[in-house]
Length: 190
Image (cartoon, rainbow, N blue to C red; front, side, top):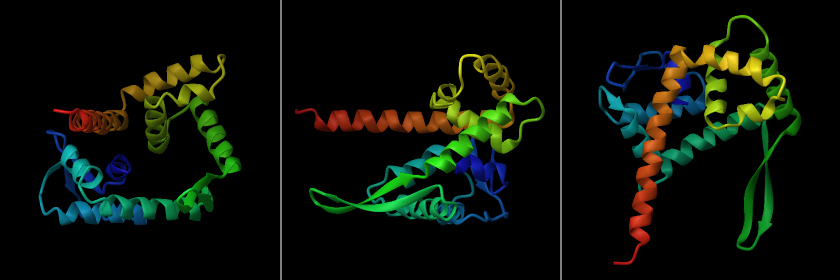
């Protein structure tokens, strides 16, 4: 969402990898929620690490749940997912079900756009960078298509968007490592 907001000129990244809110408010509810949370932090410049830790790793999950709820609503509205109640051991819980037809369409669209020659859109560069970092992207291509995919990934690697994605991924990886160490240390008997 942060990278999406940077692409939509809702956030600006400084030379020091700090984030500044722009006057251009987002249009999607989930991004509006994140924008407002960042704005409520009352700081002119914020590090990505500070934003992520205050939203994702704080004692209260209220901010994170409010953002996830908006994102979930958008995905339901776009018919990408549906919610089902499932009986469990401790009562009924909400289960997210992926719309397989929409998922297949999106995968096909990504494949076709990456295999075609021509200019890559910002959105495609963003999704390809994110999917490549999770190792998912290479799983959707057969061995004959992977050569073309690798060429396109080389193009993408040097783009501004890919660099912004790497900054966000680096911060997330570092935060996850810190949290893991904290959990291990907390569970180790003295």
